[in-house]
Amino acid sequence: MVKHVRGVAKQTCCGEALVELLEQYGVDTVFGIPGVHTLDLYRGIANSNVRHVLARNEQGAGFMADGDARISGKAGVCILITGPGVTNAATPLGQAYIDSIPVLLISSVNATHTLGKGWGCLHEITDQRAVTAPLTAMSATAFKPEEVPEFLGQAFALFQSSRPRPVHIAVPIDVLAQPTNGEWSARLAPARPGPDLAAVRAAASLLAQAKRPVILVGGGAIDSTGTMTELAELLGATVIASNAGKGIVPDSHPLSLGTSLMLAGTRSHLAQADVVLAIGTQLSETDSFIDRLDINGKVIRVDIDGARTNDLYPATIGIQADAAATVNALVSALKETGASPIQNDLDAVREQNNAKFSPVEQQHINLLASLRKVLAKDAIVMGDMTQVVYTGTFAFPTEQPRTWYYPAGYCTLGCALPMAIGAKLAAPDRDVVVLVGDGGFMFTIQELATAAQLKQPLAIVIWSNSTLQQIRDDMVGRSIPPTGVDFTNPDFVMLANAFGCHGTRPDSLDAFEAAINDALRAQTPTLIEVQQGASWLT
Ligand SMILES: Cc1ncc(C[n+]2csc(CCOP(=O)(O)OP(=O)(O)O)c2C)c(N)n1
Image 1 (cartoon, rainbow, N blue to C red):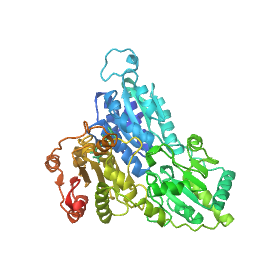
Image 2 (cartoon, helix red, strand yellow):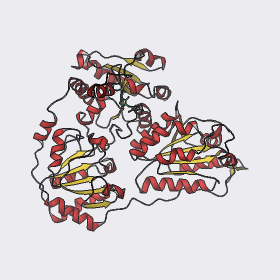
Image 3 (cartoon, rainbow, N blue to C red):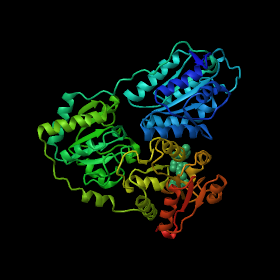
Image 4 (cartoon, protein in one colour):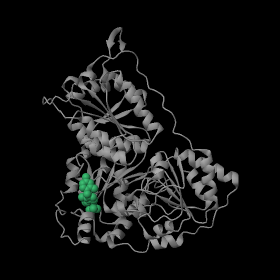
């Protein structure tokens, strides 16, 4: 590609052209850490309108891209070096894969003529593609500049038209430096397929005849807010959300049991359903923490991934289509046939669910009630792998999708802080809170420097107990003496100050609420350490 800069013809290299093409696809932010292998990509970033966010470790960059994608609904992009950059990002790729998040990793790879030779080149890896292939929907290496627009076209088509999962495109360093020929432009991608209307009519008729219908709602249905509630109301059906589906139907709706597949009342209610409509959910083990749900009714499955309709819970009617379009079609079909809703009172189920909480869970519930009180409905809570988040899954009332996050599938300690950084960049006007254990926080603590550099007013609540409590409990449960779980924490307030952040240890629920309010209005992140067992929590 030849560009004219102040009358002088300038040849664009592949790295630069790649960034220009990303801009054409609507990418406005990339997360990364530069290295000698990505200089030509940074030449492109430097000459573009793309914002570059410097992470402090590539794992952080990957999670930031993931958090950005979860909130914006668009691809989150990271640009990383060959070898260690890519391997550091393997974990966020794994998480984005399991949660169907469109993360695009652009990386370099060693020069074409060195690949596979084992010469010991800088950042060399025997087969980089083999690292990311199992963690992505597509992992491709562009051996010529002109392959870049093709692979990017494929990546954005995958994100937009099918189950969105991460994509890795690697470009050898010699190819990144090569001049490009011709103009590159973004390619069109088809819309997701709509449902087969005969199958929709059959599903609507099964649902209309159901005496005890249940709708299981997953993250694939995230764009069906409103119509999903209408569908439930037309049927009088109970709605149960997966972790990723939390908030699609407001938790406060009389027909909603929230995210509660891990609770006995909900599970026995599901077992009694005569028709179960599962939309955009893979019914995974990490939503219930049992191997197999007791489902005895006829199953209708709606999924963009056709294989899901025939897995552990085979469908009587399977519809491979976009969830939102299918919910619309089901609502229209039910309105046409004039279906009437069943009477459905869920109070007894809720009572059974609320029967017994442990003393520590009760502390979580008290803290979460305070948090809910001070947060706006659209505030974002990024949850890490900590018991207060496990409790919040069912105990934190959520009224909107894309507001409560607990990525239980890959279950990666330390994901929440960098995801929150990406989320805040995607939605600067929304409040963002991190809920993280003292164990999990230490996994990505360096990204506090990123958040401080960005002056993000994140409220970072650290649930502090100087132990890996969940694993300690599991050991005790299996009669194993607690081993390798206890640790000494740093002074989190001093640590926050060292990073240029605020730090505080509230000593009452009022003080906690004030700390959250202050944090969300600050010019920098705030660490709020909450001690498990503190008298004000009980
Ligand atoms: C990367 C990674 N390593 C190990 C684990 C296993 N694991 C799951 S929960 C947990 C304990 C987390 O401790 P903490 O963050 O302090 O939260 P708590 O359980 O005390 O609430 C561990 C080690 C994991 N999920 N992810």
